[in-house]
Length: 280
Image 1: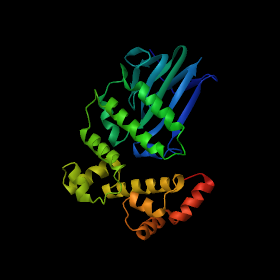
Image 2 (image 1 turned 30 degrees about the horizontal axis):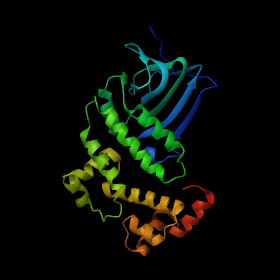
Image 3 (image 1 turned 90 degrees about the vertical axis):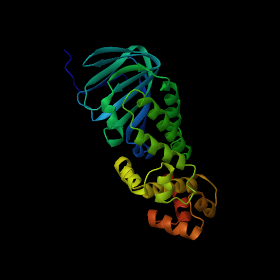
Image 4 (image 1 turned 120 degrees about the horizontal axis):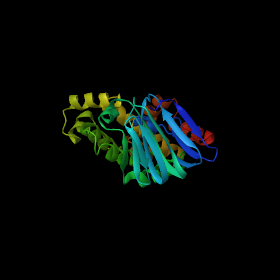
């Protein structure tokens, strides 16, 4: 009988790149606690007695071994390991090397449906796509492209984890809508027009956004617009007037007033400060 324990035994030859919410605030918007890519050699053992996150590991090369209460499972290239929150597990390298990518999802409302999915190993065509997206995302830390890459990861991940679990179709529809809005932030959205995109009543749509995103729909759109404006101010050479129009403000004065209220700085002041410090 396995004595489950929290263990982390990693050989010094192992290399990992971590994506944290501190460096990538977009992770928090999807309730991802952390993500990364790993190149593993020698000893590599990870065990959790009672994890507070859902653990997803995708193998692209090499072999591993997953130990669960129901037994041992071999892991090969193209396999997806799923370990739900609250259930013990241990996984380790099984061979000379193992290349993976992984995500830790919060045990929160958007991901509660994962408790209906059985822990284990199964083939996944998403392994290579997620690996390259997460690897690329790590190298786009200071680039506006990171937002688009994050959304591509979210789409691919959502498709994968909902295949065999009870699909939370409401969450999927909401995610898809706001992903599409990334390219339509110039549109003068209202609560009614957003709700109409999904054929919901405004009151029902507002309740769902509060339930899944912990903020109302217009607040979420405002958050998205602010993030896009900050990216464009820091990384592009667009004029403030052009940026204002890109995020839904036809009047540059109103945009500047809104931006100062949100950040404490004018758009021009923010552009200068962000470029001098290299931070958002």
